Length: 494
Image 1 (cartoon, rainbow, N blue to C red):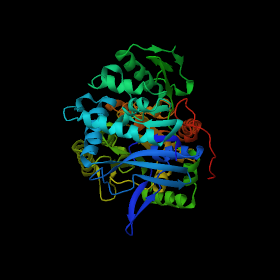
Image 2: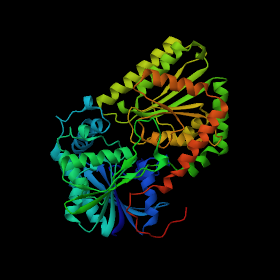
Image 3: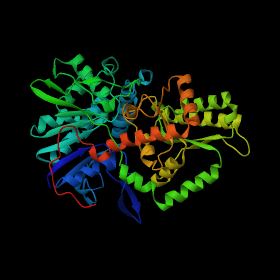
Image 4: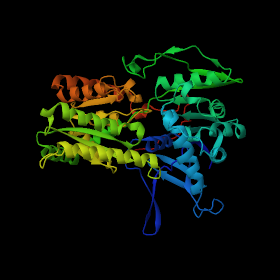
């Protein structure tokens, strides 16, 4: 069945597991993140489709159904699964995307390595995604492509299906021209994105950087700049942008440039925070802590997340503020993102070494300053920790948005708690009432976490009230593909 909405994303929209010899599709554990968010749009169309990849030894005879039909609370949709070999996946994702694109997007030029990139393979995989999307899409349908590893899909898709509306959403930072143009394939990438009807970013700065890159590579016409809404002004933070272009015209084709910050499911999170089970778990955590304050950090094991820098700041805090020893604990959750990549293994090793050193230097039989967790925590359990924590410490070195800080705020139905947030997280432009920190500065980091620990009750509650207003104002339900509306269909009952 042809689809009114086709979502193109590298991951499948469920967890595929074997139970009693049968393949079972499970719902994702968390309500947030890109996968469950995108599935929610299928409830607004008669039929949708999702294009992803699935590992196969022989793509000609993959040994699985390349299309499966799903009907669930989100709607009716087809999942088209591209059979890719392990070699194709490694070259497309782990090498090209993670070793070449990822460090440039996050402005870590020193980690950039394009020598091993198989550009032919990257182009081929993107072409396969485009062909699968073209096959699923109805006449005039919206095809919504997601993230940098599918940069070339819009260009291929426009060639074979000029009737389609094409949207592209970036979930990472987008750097300025002097950084992005390090990529030798920059013109092919950007020309593909200019085949879109709309390209969207989480914050105005990334949109402005994209326009600067386009203008450095092509002769284009850009619309007059418009002033950014006041709610996205956080004075004194690195990512604030005051004016943006909203349209680019290239070779007779208009491409909208949108700003669409990703939010969280506020009502759902608040509901989980209010359950009797969560209430009981919070009290249990508080009993275990006694009079010790809990600092909570949650993120992936990635050099962009600043985990090592955060632990070093905590070490300096205990060194310079001996009165805090025995009175604060840091729960540092760092979940491995890519187990097959040596650079991420190195980061995990560094984090473990620093945490071990801190516990060795300052720990006692009764008190261990750092609890290092390297596994994913179930969402309901995480909400309990959000509620129990005195401080959420979220300080990535670079981050497209960061939903953890918004989950923490949404969980704080008590109106208390302090958020320490990096000014290099996209969310900082919305959450100016956090304690803003610069993770590249020892002094700024140490001052921010000490301020959070010592903050009095009235200031905590005032800041949290404003943070909760900002998070609710940009609830997940308000997010969408730029200016391109999804064709209305029968909305399924919850």
